[in-house]
Amino acid sequence: MAGVLSQIPYGVLQPGGDGATALYIVAFSLFIIGIKRGTHPSTAKQGNLVAAGGMVIAVVTTLLLDGIGNWGLIAAGLGVGATVGYIASVRVQMTEMPQMVALYNGVGGGAVALIAWSEIRHGISLHETIPLDTLIPVLFAAVVGSVSFWGSNIAFAKLQDLIPTRPLAVPGQQVINVLLLLGIIACCVDIAVNNSDPSQAIFILILLAAGLLGNLVVLPIGGADMPVVISLLNAFTGLSAAAAGFALDNVALIVAGTLVGSSGTILTMEMATAMNRSVANVLFAGFGGAPAGGGGGSSEERPHVSIGAQDAAIKLAYADTVVIVPGYGLAVAQAQHAIKEVADELEKRGVTVNYAIHPVAGRMPGHMNVLLAEADVPYEQLKEMEEINPEMSRTDVAVVVGANDVTNPAAKNDPDSPIAGMPIIEVDQAQQVIVIKRSLSPGFAGIDNDLFYEPNTSMLFDDAKKAAADIAAEIQNL
Amino acid sequence: MSLMTEITILVLAAFVGFEVISKVPTTLHTPLMSQTNAIHGIVMLGGLIVVGYANDPLEYIIGTIAIAFGTINVVGGFMVTDRMLGMFSKKPKPKASSDSNSGDKA
Image (tube, rainbow over the protein chains, first blue to last red):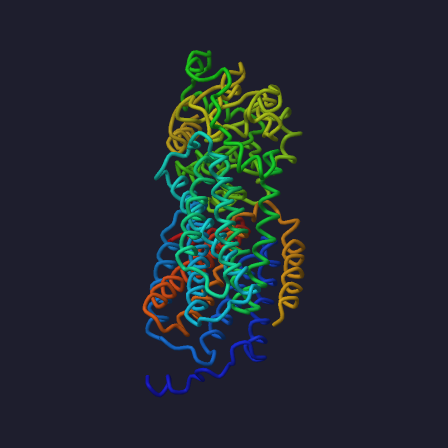
């Protein structure tokens, strides 16, 4: 062992030297290739490995820098991090993917904030003036990293149902947020002006205030908007990593962080577009916090048709075309395999089955696709919204499984609805609709779904997984 | 590196990011977000540098936590992306042969 260790070329690379920079360039090139390959289903898995390879090169390069020491601590940090990351990634259910990404994002942001803190301490301990081109990126990294850490943790807690997913807001929330932000900026200016001897106490105050801001910004956002928030925080963490790269003069951090920042921004904007809302509206409107217009207590009394698994099976088995519309309820109930069974039974009878995927179905765009892929649903049967909507009027039965707001015709018909203008899967155009849902309760948007009370809609009140299993069994018995 | 060189790199990288990510099918948004999420775990390099050159107890603690956080981000992010993408890539198979149920033992 000692023989092997002695052959490792410790400290061969100079920090900022050509050797290290060249290896970092290789690393970030692999990131770009990896992301590029990640945009096609056939090459995505390989692309992920390419990017991971880039990361290994970047880490090894850093460990070989001249003067790096404290190997015990480094080993401890790497060991703990790798173990936790490994166990979490192996154990996580596909349904819990959004909160997992939120959590990973949070620790990334936390790492940035801690590194910024450490850089400031280092600067102060040298008793020299800290140049502004180091200080400003450090301050940016500290603020954005801290916002991202706390914001992601709140997002995680909401998605994991540790705290209510309903928007939580205090009166005057926006004013408080703006004041907090101004306070943070003032503190940053103070540190920048006194860059010959910056106060560490003020810096810690910045970290805390930014953390509070992260909490306050994400808490009022409802569960339905979490995908946008996670994507945005992902972009934030990327940018803060790039800022840390400016402070540390590290090209790998600058490029990788910026890549994530810009790609995350694109994903965020695409998602907001899919919901027909602006990113600012998602962040600041407190969507769903407003009382449901006209709904509320009276909604239970509106007439609806309730059916059992047997009736649903008959409707489906004698249809020619069936479209399944999955939503987050399917994910929560882990019903993807049971739904696939229903589809298999129907296909045996010659029924054409397709799946209609709303861009923001689930709590993360593309989340439904991952879950249905897990259940071996063929790729060709997954139809995007624009593709399936024209087909809806020719569909015999649409089955809505655990989806709610994305099927609400109020988005088209009621200009006063909070979700007015949001693109929906037009299941109300189908000949018949079966909605599998536990109750008539409203979705994340907190509004009643008019679909449930349409004359051609039948409600099947049950857990999605159990209902699907029952329907599959009933179809077999027909 | 001079500040302007670094800003040049930043701007170019931003355009590369926009270019590479546009036109991604919705299907792959979740794994892609997860993968880019893993990539910003590169901040762990900052943790390594901080700890590697640190010489006061608080910096040891801050830096080691930063390394652990960054490593969770990197290892967890790439592995979970790999698991997700494994579900997509096994899809063409079931039609031809019947070796299903092999994917998610984890």
